[in-house]
Amino acid sequence: MIKADYAKRRETLLSRIGENEIIVLFSGAPVPSSMDECFPFEVNRHFLYLTGLRRENMALLLSRTGGRTKEILFIEQPVPQMERWTGKRVTIREAKEISGCGEVQYIQNLMPRLEWILGREFPEKVWMDCHRESIDSVPFYNQLQAEKLLKLYPAMHLCDIHPVISRMRMNKEAAEIAAYRNAVKLTHQGLNRVLSTLRPGMMEYAVQAEFEYEIKRLGADGVSFPTIVGSGINGCSMHYEFNHSKIEEDSLVLLDLGARVEGYCADISRTYPASGRFTPRQRQYYDLVLRANREIAGFAAPGKTLTELNDRCKAVLAEGLMEMGKISRAEEIGKYFMHGVSHQIGLDTHDAYDRMDRPLEPGMIISDEPGLYIDEECIGIRIEDDLLITAEGCTVLSEGIERTAEEIETIMRGRAEGMEQA
Ligand SMILES: [Mn+2]
Image (cartoon, rainbow, N blue to C red):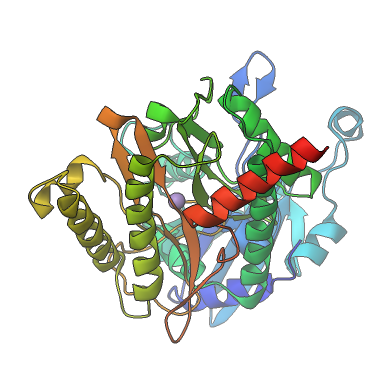
């Protein structure tokens, strides 16, 4: 695990709420998938950010009362019969060591404690994670707990802590940036393996397997998100993840993928020609996307907003498509580029933010991902890098991952020659 100062993060968070207020945050519970199985457990990222712990059935209680702050971490009590099946649980000593939290208790003590606080101390606000992604989505565990508590104490003043912690998470610390660099490095190694194995006739899932084999072999937690390998027309679906088509001769293969290391998600896209050489038409579009990618890397800086980055990207792509005669007015760019060029990245691939239009600050990590999706020519291209905003502008964390057509063709040609010799 990264050596982050979790106690300091909790202290900062407590300084952002008022006197006589409390925060209750849960790590989450396993979500059933079918029969007796559950989806792989994903810890609440705010909980991870504040404790360094990744396991289920834990909670964090932070309070500010009487001019004093207090923090208690609640963990699952080990049950030997259960541990026989599922392995060791975190002990109180380990939980203290990882989180730096002085007081750790078992989770069954949480409700009696809340009963005392809500019934005797009357906090003015109770902050919980009430985030939801869409009206129709299944609620997150923290929201279910908030509803439960609100039903028991209908007069309690519930507030959403999500934007407050999200704001903190936007500015990465040195340890986080170091973990992020590792995630990018492993992603690069995974892409190298893809470049040396990619052939026309391969199935997309086989390309996915090559990437994931390499990053897992090298110690990644896993993938940042489901690996996208879209060849030909599939590259035109932005979040295509079936990866079940055969890669045709002369098609482009769009890869959007990332290794997750110590919780941090690299998010990189590259587009490779299956047969090792771009056709002249593919190359025209490719160089235009690359121009936009480089333009944004030169443009991103403190004070700029993601909206400004997006407008600049659209202007570059529109100008290029007008030169090619593909569109006649800049407004038509939405037909071929239909997503934003940038988002925050961190413990989540599409990382937490408090306001979409917040000006960039040093320490933020964002994506730089222009693309073009030309259905009628079966051409989907995206080139995505991860940028660290600095005082002067930005550093491209993935600068070393080959991106020009020449670099890609040279590597793929070298590989073919190597094979002939072998
Ligand atoms: Mn992205």
